[in-house]
Length: 439
Image 1 (cartoon, rainbow, N blue to C red):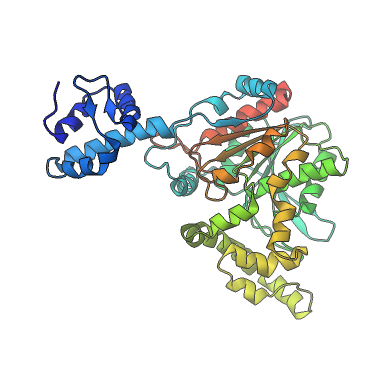
Image 2: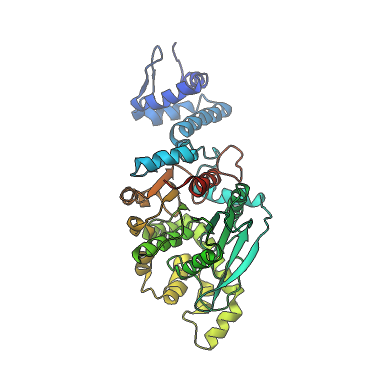
């Protein structure tokens, strides 16, 4: 079996079964496909010359087909993977494998959109296009400073019914498409959901000039206490995403630090920004800064504009701790943090803020069962920012890291469904925790 031209090589590859193509991709790293007679030799050191020599011989269709073959091999060999499991407790891993098998199955990210930003953006598009109309009951909860947050209740049936507390991401609320689909999934298994809408979020009008911060758990503490007073016999677990994960982690660790009972049986955390300094640097890279960073800052500005009358009144009375007009001009999150967050919550600088709120500094103090899911290509928290060693130091935590998925993306399938890997994981974990007992 001989090959006279490079085109013959491509055509021969096109007729190989997929497992042989995969084998070829592996073995050509050594420069030879040994199972052919004579061997197909594609020296790695001459790869560029080999590709260049194909140009005069290969038609456009053949080139496209060859690229599809190569991409398919790359996708199957390098992209499709079960999540990486980071957990120091074999018994917990075995329990999760039995009750939450989705964590151990290969994750097949949407083949035509595996890139992080595509996953992040497309997930919002897909889930928004499949918007749900869920019945809710809104309750305003007065905070100790006179301000208030709103919490939205779903599928309320009985006092003993299990309850899942959902904490959205920055500027998020119960209206977020991911939250709506989570609530729908939890409703189908009979659970009550309650979503915390941060001050000014989810059409909640401010009554004081105080906003919210991913490092300040004052409101969360009071909301959890309120829920437990209303439903003392209802098992409670938490699920949090992005900035909500920061709040959840700090709340749990502060319970431990103060010697208080944590009413949450367990928590599931999605797309955790583990290391805030690294998250900031990543969000300030050119593309992220001009897209995700600017978009989130705009949403924060919208909260300020929606409550402009209140802020202007306090500004005129000299009771506003930040420059409101300057805040309205902020284009990026770091500018908003310097202008609003630092003076409002008493932080000296961003380093002080990150030291107080960065989740990777609190992993050793998490004392209830935690399952966390991150993507290695998360624009907010890339793989090198995930504190695997710290996680291994606490047997209460099981961390799963997918190869792809972006930030709260995790789309899968050729035609991505609004019900993705995270939806399946949430239902399996919630049922395991609330009905079968925690590992």
